[in-house]
Image 1 (cartoon, rainbow, N blue to C red):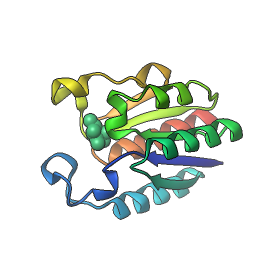
Image 2 (image 1 turned 135 degrees about the horizontal axis):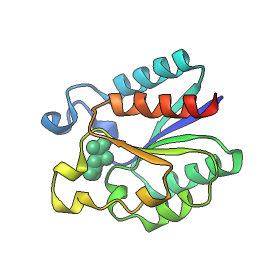
Image 3 (image 1 turned 90 degrees about the horizontal axis):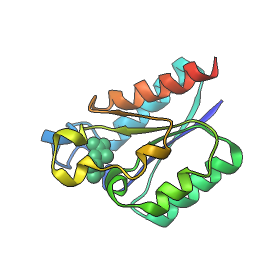
Length: 143
Ligand code: DQA
């Protein structure tokens, strides 16, 4: 079963980006972790990252058309992208919103997620492990 793991702006800079918040591991490390977790769960995981809202919306359309489950870290899009929210609302397969940090424990503007209400569920605050938990949720939902 194919699963897309989609990452929004600035997540390609993991490792050098605010390591006190996001940890010292790189985006490449995250890719490897997700692929390995997927293998263990019987999921064919494809990990992508973009800084471009239009590209992210296109990927969500692709997932909607193929009914592919999605693990999505919308990054800063979380807090303001109604375009992303409207794209997510079109799909029927599970979509798990994930965050590395716990946005609710941070600045006020991070307390609002405009996508949470159209996601299947949200996992936040567990570092890279948030992605593994989300993949487990998808794998167990299938069985
Ligand atoms: C984030 C949290 C967002 O507030 C922030 O804009 C990000 C990363 C996280 O994974 O903790 O870029 O989504």
